Image 1 (cartoon, rainbow, N blue to C red):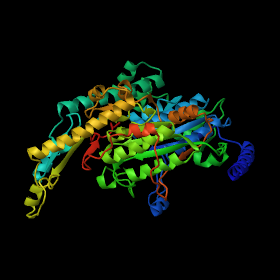
Image 2 (cartoon, one colour):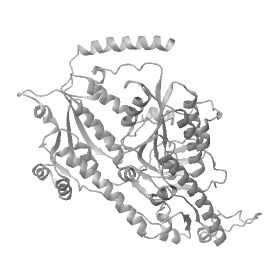
Image 3 (spheres, rainbow, N blue to C red):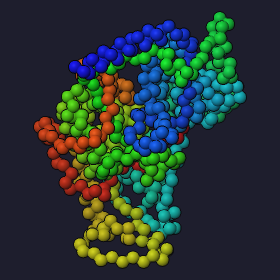
Image 4 (cartoon, helix red, strand yellow):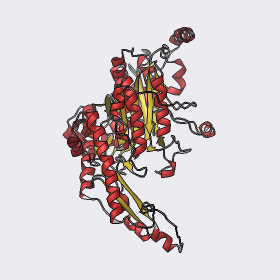
Length: 559
C-alpha cells in the first residue's frame, strides 16, 4: 500500500514537472560528446573515496535512458554526436549504434561530427543521417588488426617454462606462454574471427551509407585519406567547422540552436515513474570467474594486469541469484555476461544456481564483448541467449597447467628444499615439468571436465555431444558465427532482451528493471524444483580447483 502511495506522489510530481518543462523552450539540437570507453552497466561497489574523487563514467545502460528522453520529447528536432577518440570494443559500439538508429526511428535527425575517424568511430557514425568532418580532419587507416605475443623464449631466458595440457590445439589460452609462434589451429581461428568481425563493419557501413559491400570495402582500402579525399569518396557528407554547425544545420537562413545535454538535461521531459509491483531483474557476471567474492579494481590500468582486473566470484553471484529466486516480484531475469572464463568449479556453482532460477523464472543471457569458456558455461541454463555480432564466445574447452620457475630460482642463486608426504603432492609445484604419469592425470581431469562441459551445452542447446564437440574443443566464434553454429539464439543486446522478456512475462514496456548486487545478509540454498535438480545432476565433486576454463588470451580486435 505504501509503495503505491509513494508511486502516486512521484507520478503527480512527474506530471507537474513535465507541464512546467513544456513551458520552457528547447534547442533544435542537443549535443552529446562521446569519448573514451563506456561500461555496459553501472559499476558495482568500489572504493567510496575514489568514487568521490573520480566519479565513474556513465554506463550505456544509463545513457539509453537519456536517449529515450530525447526520443519522446517532440520539441527536440535532432541530436549532434561529437565523437572524440572512442576506445571501446566493437560489441559495445554496436550498442551505441543501435541507440542512434532508434533515435532516427523516432523521427530525430542524427548528425555525427568529428575531427577524425577510425574504424570503430566510423562504424558508429554510419548509423547517422549525416556524417561531418572538420576541415583539415583526417581518416585513420581503417580495417582490422590483431597482434599476438609469444613469450616462450622470454620465459626460457629467465629460467622459466610453461607446462599446460590442452583439450585440443584450438584451446589456445596458454599458447602465448608455451609457443614461439602461432600454431596452424590458432592462425585458422584468428582468420575466421577477423573475417567475421570485418564483415560486420563492412555490412554496417554499406547499409548506413547506402552503398554495396564491395564499395564499402573499396572505401576502407583507400584510407587513410585527407578531408578533401574523404568528401570526394563519399565517406563524409560535408566539411564543417564545429563553430559553424548552427549555420550548417539551420533552415531558411536561420541558424539552429545547439545546446549540450548537460545544459538541457533538466528541461527535457522526464520518463514516467516506474509503477511498483512486478519487475525484471538484471544480474551481471563481469571479469574472470573465480572462487570467492566479486572484486573491483580500485583503478583501471592502461593495459591488462592480472591483479587489477575485474573478477566475478561464485559466492557473490550465487547469493545474488538466491535473492532473486526469493523475490516473487521479479518475474523475469536477464544475466549480462562479459567474461573470458576462469575457474571450472566457480563456473559450475554459478551455473547450478542459475539453472534453479531458470526452472522458476524466464532467464535470458546477454553476452557482452566476451563470453567465452567459463563465460559460456554459466550461460547454458538460459532460455534464450543474445550476443552482439562481434561478441567473442564459445571456447568450449578446458586446459590446466603451471609455469615452471625452478630455473629462475637457480639463476637467482636461491636454494629451496621441501619435505613431502604423498606421491603427487608437489604435482603443481613450479619446480619441475609434469612427469608422464602426472600429465596423464591432468589429462584425465580436463577430459572429465570437458565431457561435463559438453553435457551442459548439449542439454542447453538441444544438440548431441558429438555436434557440440565439432564446434567446441576450445574454438572461439563471433556472435554471427555462434548464431550459425547454434550456440546463441539471437543477435542483440540488453535492449532487445529486455523487450522480449517483457513480452514473454506480460509486463508493459514501462516495467522497471532492477540491477541486483549481493545483499549484506547471505541466504542459504532452498529446495530446487525437480527440473532444476535433474539438470544439475552430476555436480562437480571431482573437479580440480586448479583446472581453468579459459578462452584464448586474444585481445579484442583493435579498430
